[in-house]
Image (tube, rainbow, N blue to C red; front, side, top):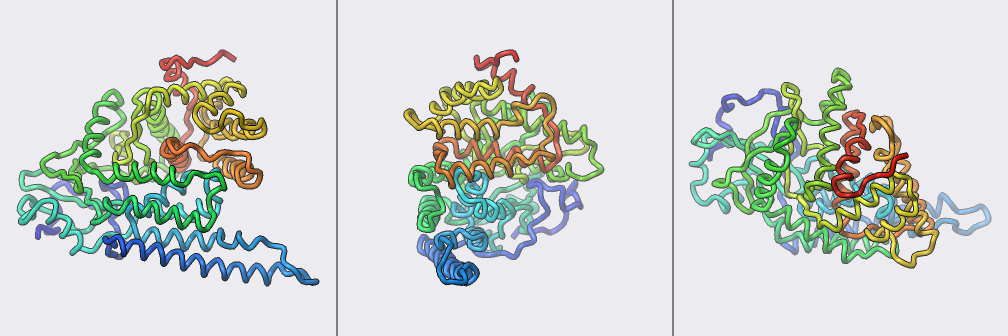
Length: 477
C-alpha cells in the first residue's frame, strides 16, 4: 500500500494550503451505506426521528399555547417544520452523503420561495465537509477502478483526505513518474443510488408538507437526479475541466487544473494538485480591501460570462471550490462536476429580463418572467406584481450604480423575508421552474461568497457589455 511514507518534495507544511481549499479532514470516518435497502432504511429512520420530533414539538406548543379558558390556538402542522426537526434531517442526510446530501445542499440555496427559513438555515450545514469513508472502503474503490496492484503507480499516496464532500473525497498523491496529483475518489454506491436518494428525500419532505402546495416535486426531483447523475460521472467532469481551460484562457487571474486521463476513470478524477489558500482567507482583516475587490470582481465577471457568453456554468459555488494564491493574486477554480449547458433561448430570456431590471421597466420584467416560467400567462395581476417585486429585489447588485458592498448588504435576509411572505403566507408566487434550480444555486452562492470575503464589486458595469453582445442593450437613464 503506497500510504503517506514521507512528505513529497515541495509539499506545504501549512495544512490550509491544499488543493481542496480546506484543512485536511479531521472528522471521524464513517462507512457510506451502499445498498438501496441500507440507504432507504436511513431515510426511514429520518422519517421516524422527524415524526417523534414533531409530536414532541406539538405537545410543547399545546402546553405553551393553551389559553386560560381552554382551547388551542396553534396550527400543530407547523410543529413538523420546526428548526429542531430541520436539524435532525440535515444530520441524517450528512450521514448518508451521496445524492441525499447533495439534494439537501441544493435546497439550502434555493431561498424562501421553496422552503421555510428554518429548513434552509439548518440544511446549510450540509455545505460543510462530510465524514470521510474508512481506509478499507477507500482501498476497495481504488482496487475496483485501477485494478490489482494499483499501488505500483504511486510513489506516495496520502490516505488522509484533504477534503470530503457529498459525492467523493480528495486525496493527494505522487506518481512514480513525478506528477503531483489530487485524486477525487467517489464514494461507493453513490452513482447508482442517486435517483433513489432524491426520490426518497423528496417523498419525505412532501410527507412533511415542507414545499408550497403547487410545487411540482416530481419534476424538481427528476431535474435534480439528472444533474446529480452528471456530477457522479468523473469522465464528464474531466471533459468540463478541459473545456474551462479553454474558456478562461483570456482571464489571467484564473487558473484551472489539468486532468490526467491515464489515471481518470468514471469514479476517480486525477488532476493537478493546486497550491492555494481557502477563499475565505480573504476575509482576514490584514487583507487589503483592493485585493478583496479584485478577487470579487474576477468571480462576478466569471459568473456573468458563464451565463451570457459561455452558455456553460459551473453551478456549485461552494467555498471549497475556489482557492486564492496570495503570491500571484490568482484564483484557482476547482470541481466542475456540476457544469450545466444553457440553451440559447434560455440565455436570451435572461438577458432580456436583466436588461429590463436595469432599466427599471417593470412591465418588461413581467413579460420576461412569464417567458422564463416565473409566472404563467393568465396569472392574476397580484401574482405578476409580487413576482416582479421579488425579481427587482434580488437583482439589487445589478441595479446599483458603482461598487456594491456585498458584505454590508442585508439583501439575503430581505429576499428571504419577502419570498416567504409572498410565497408561503400569501400564496402569490409560483415555485421557480426546475430548469432554473442550478442557476439559482450559483447566483445565491456567488453572492454569499462575495459577502464572505468582503468584496465590493460594480456588477452593473460588468454585465452591461455582456448584455450588449447578446443584443439586450439597456436604455440610457
